[in-house]
Amino acid sequence: MTSKTMQPVAKIDHQTPITVQVHAHLRRLILTLQIKPGEALSEKELSLKLGVSRTPVREAFIRLSEERLVDIFPQRGTLVAPIRLAEIEEAQFLRGVLEAAIVRRAARSIDRTHLKLLEDNLRLQQRTLLRKDYDALLEIDERFHNLLCDSVSLPRAWRMIHVLKGQIYRVSYLTLPEPGHGEQMVQQHTNILEAVRDGDEDRAEQEMHKHLQEIWGPIERMVQDNNEIFQS
Image (cartoon, rainbow, N blue to C red; front, side, top):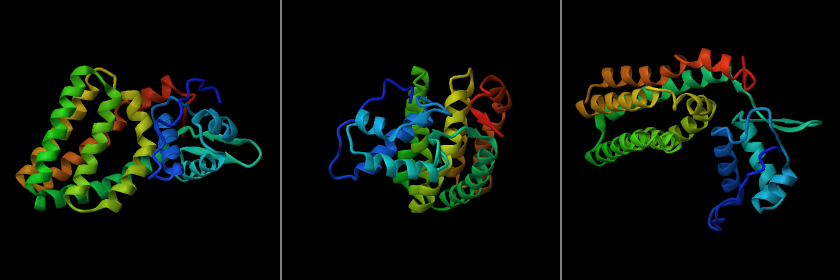
């Protein structure tokens, strides 16, 4: 593994399974391209660098493989998976089905508490965008979608969406710093929230679909500029 700056898992929480913490740590490094597609992952090396035993690292690899973020080869070891366009397309389709239904339900029934949380989140997005802190902006974006699921009491739906977003997050991480991209994302969230606040189910669904399809605009150029990390 060539990531020499790998840091230990920040302060192990003994109330949470170590595998969960190692998985979350590695997942974050993969999604933010700190560990790049095609990079080999060593169970032994990671256990030493992260300050944990090899068992939670092995179990984290299995979970990441189930999410299609790593490929495990019996004779070759474990490699970070390329960004597969077919899997992004499938993930976006499934997200569209789930999040369209969620946002329609939110437009029908959202309460004042969740509206306030979403409004606060949107203001935080705007402030974060001004600082050009794109890592933080992606995390706040994830929280926005999580809050929509919470507002209609569908926690299992969020867990499915969270896994699906892993196939999309790396592309978002590449495109978000481009001029106008972050502004567009925040405006789309604003449009979604306005439709939900107005109780307009059709418009809320339409705005969500626009938001989820936006990724395809720059993807062709992304593939050309980073063809070593993409796969059809």
